Length: 378
Image 1 (cartoon, rainbow, N blue to C red):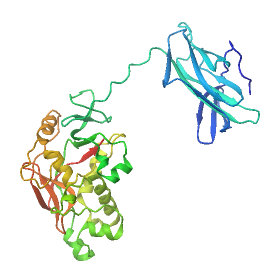
Image 2 (image 1 turned 45 degrees about the horizontal axis):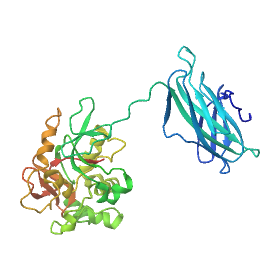
Image 3 (image 1 turned 30 degrees about the vertical axis):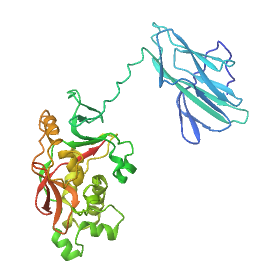
Image 4 (image 1 turned 120 degrees about the vertical axis):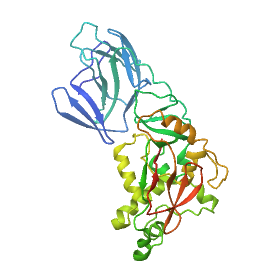
């Protein structure tokens, strides 16, 4: 392995790339192939800059400091046409970009340092460099608000950005993981709010053959089956129980529904989950969000009138109105109207729904087609 370059010398370029895992570094060689070097805790080197990429104008030089522990020889790899010299006393690299008329120079790549001690132990660091001006930083993401547009790239805005694809409308701002342990476990970064899908279906059946599931299989509700056979979240909600009717467990309850559908005879399947599965394929969720899921009764109430008790008789559509206003700006989107199914069940034959015209809680026969609308946490 070459010794430490002295001041004023160019770095080597016998390898062109550096990657690593927990145990090794992997050097991609100039002529092809890979060298594997074992890591050690006895050596370390870290560049002190905070930029992901350091940008240079043509021919410019910048000094980049580093922090190193241990004693070792140093090998430096640089992009073609760039110059790298080492100032060991100052613990810095002097990096010079190629001049403007060097047409063979690389415009960007990493400067890599490999340390190797007398026992063959190694440490490494990489510094991304590029010709040109640094791009303008992304503007900070605005705080979501009711009626904001939620896009396929996981961003949102109060004003419609027609260069992006809208997939939902924000109806609640806050941290939904604070209310649903399953959501927090699976999507801990979804702390900004909830958005509703642009379209729904008016023909979704909560469950097929609910009466026969009780008569033949001996389970009076889906939740009875879940309790006996799994440790999943129950779907059963007693509308007279203040805690249960105000629970925001739509995500976890949708997970429970998935387990149920994958385990029981298809003749007892939850139609809502068939709809969820299809919608997820039709409208993929951003990587930064949860997937689409059925809202609980409380989450439907948030969508209609905000953070009020579902049993509140004087609910108004204070949230539905601005959400529908935004929906009307999206071609093909449909407004929130009529009775919508929740993820919650009441008894053998009924699930719980919310009337999106008046805000009333309703019982909905599980085998009768109703509206379903999905939500997403982001």
